[in-house]
Image 1 (tube, rainbow, N blue to C red):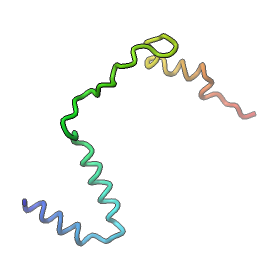
Image 2 (cartoon, rainbow, N blue to C red):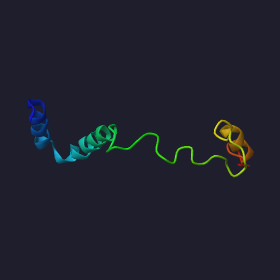
Image 3 (cartoon, helix red, strand yellow):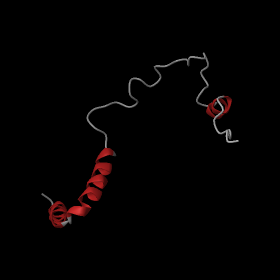
Image 4 (cartoon, one colour):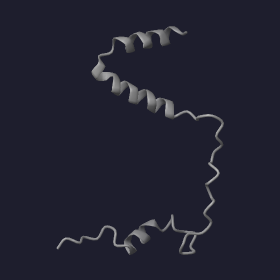
Length: 78
């Protein structure tokens, strides 16, 4: 075990219980940055939907238009 890891373990043991959750969430965030297992990227489902229900293929680039058509952002107070 490296000296840095030993020091980290010692600091963790001395940490007040109230601060454990903060350190744990930080450690989990660091762990989630590295890839898990032998997963390939992109996942198999990418590109599996060729056309949207409306038959168009450019919905992602038109997201603002689609939201406006649905009334998103309009002020209904009144």
